[in-house]
Image 1 (cartoon, helix red, strand yellow):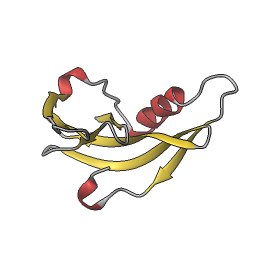
Image 2 (tube, one colour):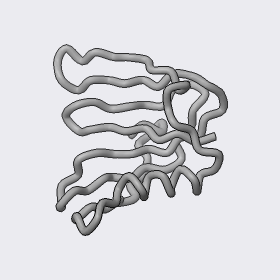
Image 3 (cartoon, one colour):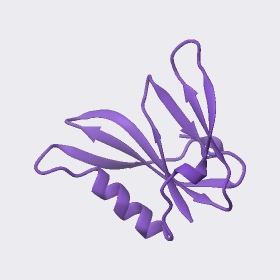
Length: 105
């Protein structure tokens, strides 16, 4: 089972926790500017995702993966991500990016 994790630079970042393994990461580039990062994570069992605000006071929330859409295969998660990143003729690109150390985005 796979899920999509989203981070917005300067606003918040999501991080896999125990029971999740980040497998791929993509920058969402909107008219030449990176506005988000998506991580496809493999989910071994329902767990919680760590959501860290990047602005003071830096609140941390743990959100249940039960609330996330799940995909049976890696390819299904990729297809959902491609669908999120396309809208008519807008200049939008998904740019593969290396996973950070420890699988964090």
